[in-house]
Amino acid sequence: MAGVLAVFLVYTAVAGNSTPQVKPSQLARQAPGKISVVGTVVGPLRGSSHSSSGLRFGLEDIGDKSPVVQVVYRGDSPPPLFAVGRHVVVGGTYAGGQVLGNSILTKCPSKYTASAPKS
Image 1: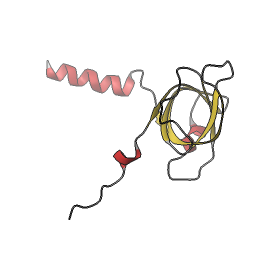
Image 2 (image 1 turned 90 degrees about the vertical axis):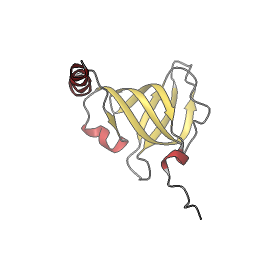
Image 3 (image 1 turned 45 degrees about the horizontal axis):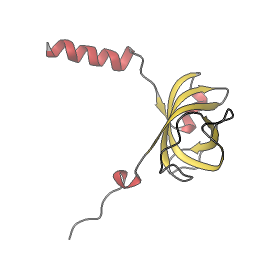
């Protein structure tokens, strides 16, 4: 039974409906479709996620000045920690050179930095 489950999980991850997770600098090579983009929010922040024109902002690679990809986010209000300079994961679709987002997850930088050595 465990072998069948393992094969199913591998199949789902490889051939299933997985969503690619990319950096903004990798988007130019992506085909239009479902996408998850990891980057740093760059401003200005314009609009509202509840309006027809959406919340608009840019994303660049984390820790790297890369070309900025434009994001139009429509949906629930962004997480409370969402702000310029924050590391986020935006889920949605990629089309026409921009990301049409429907989910935002903020990353906590302290979880991804080395802690000070204990003395």
